[in-house]
Image (cartoon, rainbow, N blue to C red; front, side, top):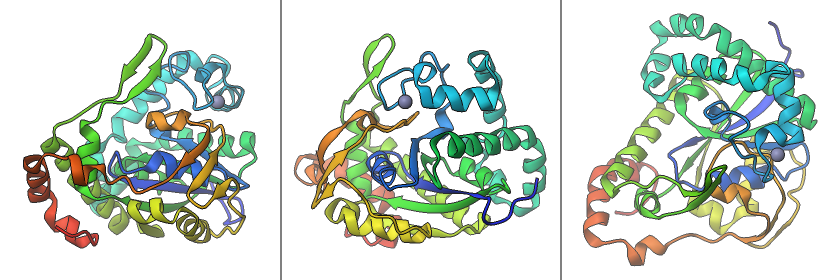
Amino acid sequence: MTSTPSTRIKVLYIAGAGRSGSTVLCNLLGQIDGFFSCGELYNLYRTPPDQRYCGCGKLVSQCEVWDAILRRTLGDDYGRQTARALQLRNQIARSRYALLWAAPFLRAWAVEKAREYLTLTGQLYRHIADVTQSRVIVDSSKVSSYGQLLAQIPGIDLRLVFLVRDARAVAYSWQRKKLKPSPEGRTHIRTASPARGALSWVGHNVATEMLIGSARVPHLRIQYEEFAASPRRVVERIAQFAGESAPLPGLDGNVVEMQVHHTVGGNPDRFRTGPVTLKPDDEWQFKMKPLDRAITTLLTWPLLLRYGYRL
Ligand SMILES: [Zn+2]
């Protein structure tokens, strides 16, 4: 498979730790003309299409956008093929393979092991671009090993947006209960203790740094706090980084008129439409228990300092 720069699909890949605000950033970028927000595409096959919700509110199998994409990628019986696609993904793209992808002497072996999944994934992004008529696909998967894998696909022009957020805010967010819709009714998204949230933050950020160091793809580091305070400035910087300059519609100061987005994974915020006010979420500074804050700071301080946060 050979691809010239003009035929390669631009993928803006949001990397970093979970609970860093990537869902809102992904959807906001998706509102730029020619951009498409797919959410966490890594999770597309994790549940069957008749059990996974699209951001538009329909099941993936009933969403006209994803039905068309999946028919082209997996065939008309895609509902039965997703199990095989998930199996291929799990063989090589999970977080546990981050070190394997980052080691240059193992890369050739990993590429060979991932060959079928690489081909399938390249076709998936191509079909997303074709069906949605977009130039840039914004993917908030964040999983670094999956980012490493995307960097190996010749048809993809991968650009990495490294989203960082204060670890204390992330650990606090992990403690919050949030609802998510599912076919069985409304359930809560996962919660975690501050220590677990902090270690997850360290692990994902270190893995992202390994991705930047080894995959050698263009990258841009963004602080969530700056994005929440000045969304237009940050989104324009990211668009420029993607080599695009189209204006961002629906943003008035810090209030965004959130459109419907066909995202297949991510935080429940992906279902929100209408006016959404973006503001730095600093509740943790007043409500986080001192012990939880101390534990989180102790576990994360070297990286907090590296990313410009005060202890
Ligand atoms: Zn949809």
